Length: 536
Image 1 (tube, rainbow, N blue to C red):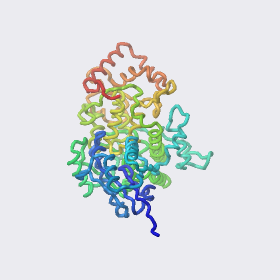
Image 2 (cartoon, helix red, strand yellow):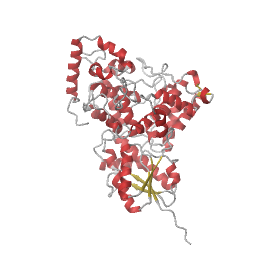
Image 3 (cartoon, rainbow, N blue to C red):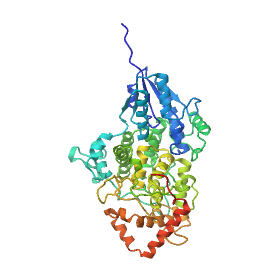
């Protein structure tokens, strides 16, 4: 009697799931097919930076080649294939029609939109859909939900401490008696230093870069044909596109920049877009490398006396604290999370976010670096480009879409809670307790031009004075900062962390308040922010 073979399955691998150790790949048999798709819609549903698109597609093509060498059957749809239908949904339907699989299986995607698309495909085709957990991460959505249950506010610091205990990173002892190495959970008091007038010393060594190979050049050529309208520049593309390159980038950071990362993680300097940062977020988010190996290499450097505790702890906190926390929030809050607008801000994103054409030195520098490379480190995102959008009154969805599309590491699970929650303080839960104005952030990260002056050298070459909020030299960041405090006073009045700040507002005379409000309104009109937004 002939033995009936198991029915073939269709395993879908998306561009942010390039993990050779994923359970999905181990589960696939010789009759199963891996589907990978380059589709134009993914670069258009929000405008995607040319380097972000190139990174995803090149890394996917390299990954598919490696899968083929490992004897996986791969159905790969190139961007410029004549029969490419341009969307995930129609390409999966086309693959189903051609292969007639018994089941569609994939790892949990990084976006609600994609998960809902998969569910629609399964419903329309009548084929079973299995969504496997993403074992790249250290915390499952279910574990995070259990931690978050009954909490009115989600404080990352408390989550981070439990992560340290669970993983044993930088801990002494075990169990409930375990204590953090050095006696402190974090070393922010020793970090967040400015460089001073002389700038970073010694100058940070330039990160390792990777010259585009034939595969990457072919991707760039296809993009020029199919997606010529994408924002940003592609000429300087040098990001890691394989696991081997990503591991080299990790080693480069650990060896040359980790030691000074902690003290200067919030500092900024003209023409130094990376400084002592790792620039590993794109490799992590595509899953070319994983957070455990990053943490363990950093801890090894500390144990070997090659990096101080304050830097290693700060790096690990980004990985097991903020990164896992943001993903937890994303899946906990659901598909409607993106629509929140807790401060009811409705302005348009200024055109200079797409062009870099502005006379504000800080914005020109930070936006210009994003346009050139698709990258900006976290304090540039939070306290320059993000802060300006917050205090000027831009709609939070416009901001979160910009962060998703314009950075090479942009994936919805991480950019949305960072932009909506941290940057725009817009993610207040419906029915939240009195005094709670945000979910991710306990207060708005709003600052005047004086903060940027303290933490960078941008203001030194600017026509505006960060200390002025009136007159020709008034810094737009400073004007908008005070206007933001005035116009959101009622919404933020119950936030205890804002009490001291509002004492400064209370010292302003009615005439000064009126002048700030009028000047800010004129600035919003001049910059194209003030307009009837079509967003919800």
